[in-house]
Image (tube, rainbow over all chains, first blue to last red; front, side, top):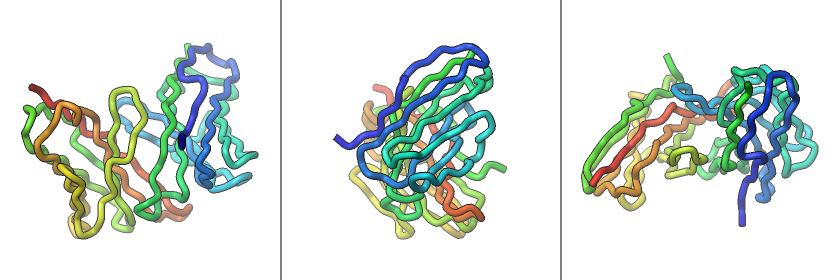
Length: 116
Length: 112
């Protein structure tokens, strides 16, 4: 089954404790990205990657890191989480950057993170 | 001004009603447009792409007006299962390449 998986799905942590949210896709997609979703603000892109070893900042990259060592995996790293990073996080993948009308973004199920 | 703006709703409509959502975008260089559906606490899923000439998929019709920079979604014969948040998504060409911008969503509640 074609899918994007994220782990963990729920996480409660404390300020400053490093954490990693994993993302994996089995569709051989080149493009992957991370979003956060907050009430009233919609989905905002954190980082994206157009291919292996190529990553770039989105709209809200501060406090986050990513890596793309393999095509299928795109982990999100919070080196020192803070309460303002409490949010719902989605990983997504697609063939391209949404340029074509067929470039559907496939989203993972989401990770609900609470930083105390 | 937000890049993509939607009326947040909620739109409460009876089953069988026709309901329309609008979305405006600010970047005239926007290239492609989509409607996504998001159920409560779930991931967004593509509902339909929006073509320049307008397009229909069953009870759903999407329209694009480039001159006025707005997109619309019409749902006919609403079902209870249509209750969800509908996200307007715009792809624009920026200095850094293509960029997808999501609206904050319009919430629809279909009632008996």
